[in-house]
Every structure is written in C-alpha cells, then in structure tokens.
Image (cartoon, rainbow over all chains, first blue to last red):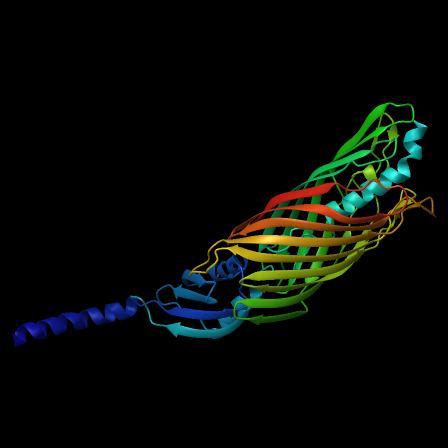
Length: 101
Length: 308
C-alpha cells in the first residue's frame, strides 16, 4: 500500500511542473463607461491586437472584461489601462484571477 | 421657360430646407442617434462604417404650380478613431432629386438629377467624459467643412437647374457644433447644437443653418440583462429643430426662402457588437417658413452600421 502511494505521489510530482507550465494567466478588467454592445466591440478589438491575448469574455451587465493570455504571456495594469483608454473608456480595476486549467 | 426661372426662388427654398433635414450636419457612424451626432467614442485605430438610405418628399403645394419634390439617396459615413478621444469622419451622399412642377402654360414637367452630392469632413474631440460602472457622460465639440464635390451646374432641356436642385452648392461651407451624450445600460440621451455657415457660389448663397437636436433611446429588449453581450433593441424618439436663414440671389435676400422646421421622429435600433440596424421616420411637427412655402411631408431613413 505504501509503495502504491509513493508511486502515485511520484507520478503526480512529475505532472506538477507540466501543469504549472501550461497555466494561462487570466485577468479581470473592470471597465467604466461600457454601456452598449457596439462599444464592447471596441474594447474587444483593442485587446485582439494585443500580443499574447488568447481569449476575451465581456460581461456588459457587470462591466467586466476577462482576458485569458497565451501560455507564458502576461498583462500589466499599465497595459490594460492603455488598451481601455484607447477604446475610449476608463479602467476602474485590474486583477489576476485563478486559471481554469 | 421663363415660368420655371421665376419659380426658382420658391423651389430653392423648398429643396434647400429638405436637403438640410436630409443630410443633417454630421451623422457619424456610431451607435446612438439616427438623425444627428453622438459623443460616444470611436476606438483608436478603428474604422466604423455607416450607410443610411433615405426617402423624402414635399408634395403639399397649394399654388397652381403644384410642386412636388422627392429626394432618394444614400449617405455613406466612415469614421476613424485617431485616439480614444479624437475621431475624424467623412460623409459622402449619393442623391437622386426630382422636381415636378406645372408651368404657367399648364404643362407638367419633371426636372431631376442624380449623383454624388457635397461631401463633408469633420473632426470631433471629447473634451469631457465621466465614466462609471454601466454608464458614461460625454461632451464633444466637432467642426468641419462641406466640400463642393457635387455637381453645381447641371442642366436639362429647360436650362440650368435651380441652385437647390443641384447636387452640390459649389461652395465651401464650414460648420461647428457640440454634442453631449449620457448613456446607461437602460437608456441613452443625446443633445446637440450646431451651426453651418453657407458661403456664396455661382451668385447664389444658401441661408446659414442652425440645428438643435435631441434623441432618447430606451432599451426595450432584453428586459433583463444576462451575462455576455446580448443584442439590444432600442425604441428611439428624436427631435430636430432646424432654422435656415434666407438665401441670397445676386446679393439680395430671397423673401421666399428659409424658415424653421421641427421634426419629431420615432424609430428603432437593433444594436449588436459588430453591427447596427436602424430605421426612423421624421414627421414635421411645426413648419414656420418664409413666404409661400412647400412644406415637408416626411422623411424615412433606414440603414446599418458596421464595426470593422
């Protein structure tokens, strides 16, 4: 039994680095001034142009934009602030959220 | 056809006011009002295109001339965001204008023309914006010029067309104004004031134009917002108060030109992330025109906008 547990722990330890490497950073941007669907596309388009952005989810009712980055890519608050400003809106909050992987 | 030329002033007035209402001062390609400007942003480096088709008629002429003016057209607008606050726009109308009139000899004649009208270039800068969760308030002055790109010396078998039946004015006409927008998830209000200085060309000068516009858009559907970005169906109610000064022909005021018209316009707008469908009908609620007038019937506008 002990041997089985040791083997399982060893196998999991091998997987851990792989899991950590595969993790994709996710950020939630709280955007002020976002109040119509047509405006939402403006932010989506700005984010699409940004290197490393893999997926974008916008919730217009909550005023949030959730950005999933490609592996190894990251986003800074200053970068998010510039993107939202270029779209014509105001960044209220920026936070990293737990990954789904 | 001397009768035709004698009637030129009143025709000019009728068609002039009609076109003032048709083309508006500035109709950028953005969600929001359907008959005038908005202060909502055009994102940096992005293009937005708008196409609006229109039909306008003015047929209730009590005089023996029984004038009937009809305008069919399409107005194309391209907007570009230089920054998040600064945007430039180009407006190019394509118009088909016709005038039916009974001559003093009792002959019914039609005079018409079609082609590209006068283009407009203008810029808009957001000088103030206050953003909060789910709402925004913005104030944005704009200024530009109407270019003499339309034909201004077209003629038919009866001679040169009246100045206002021409596709273009032949003149360089600057305009400026300011628009304010309050937008929330439930509704949007836009108000705008603008002024256009018409200059002389071909010994003819249109009267200057002042406009005061207002628009209310109320979200009818979905009633309750879910997550994501659903399409919005707005009910729209707009008003346009348009004042036009008297035209000048050969340096003299035309007493049968200019006046004030108030349009009330109900419509709808369906807005998604990438495109907008819209339609609106402008009814003249008040028409206080100088001299003998050919009053407007109605204007129908329908079109789409597209986010590149």
